[in-house]
Length: 399
Image (cartoon, rainbow, N blue to C red; front, top):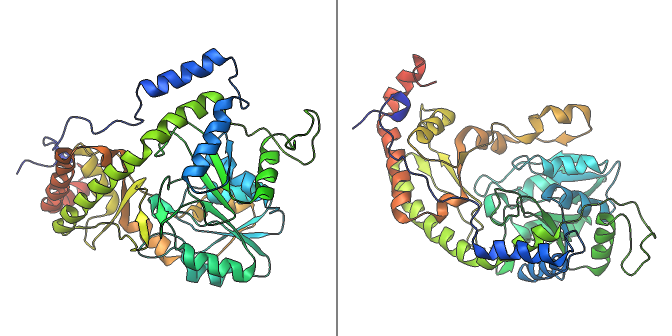
């Protein structure tokens, strides 16, 4: 067998995988339509159309679009009245905005550990984290796998908590036949460059509560009220508005989302059996209550071995496998939290995740079967030459 690429040998693959974002003349025409309309900003008819269609697709009555997913979380928290002194339970395996949005409204993030199988917030740890100050919980549908909304909703109802689903990874995902983002008081979505639907940036708050929708829209539109005068401001707000350009692009992206979800699911199933047979990786476990997995990330766990995860990832990348990533540490270790009140329980599963797990980005799952075969071949090549890789690392040749 040829030497590992990281040690100077030829890589398994030189050609690129599927590109992201995916676009065609639909997006081009949509942008031209907005250009020619002369209404480019947040009051473009395309914005209202996208809000309506995206909310309906996710089984919610209302959609309020915003400039990005971080602001979607902040807007939902503000509309819910979460503020100084309130505690909000969040998982430590997520993008940092899930927790910093809590800080931005003056509240206190409380980190509760993840479930060992789904990598989502553990309902048991959520229950243990609740105090008289707890006002809300933000379950994250990590990697596109919906959180255990049955248990989370039951616990939240018992304690009177606001539920804000962070569905940034979960466009189109379903839990027991119901769309992610439609279970809680709010669903928060992101359309950032890497997401399964994208306009470069963008976000949306979904809700089926008319009063919460009005409050959220007001927060996002300088504190105005629906039907009010232009210079009438009834609450503290800001300008979080999405543009007509982005809404038009997202309408085109929404059209192709169902077919992309189906292809990702097929390819994930194919990878599952092949990676399991390598003996070095554990494919993602999927709860039987999940009808549709968003597969924003295909997350795998390394079986116990002497090969460190980060060295394994460097070797795979050198073999021509792109889209690999991992969290180096749970988000609560970031220095930003040193200057703000926060709280956490023990999070051994989150710490373990950051030692053992990595992910393949969703665009890889849009590739063809032959491309996925190269990914499996690269895993097998690194597995078979792990001894040489470790020896090379100890002598500095794999750095």
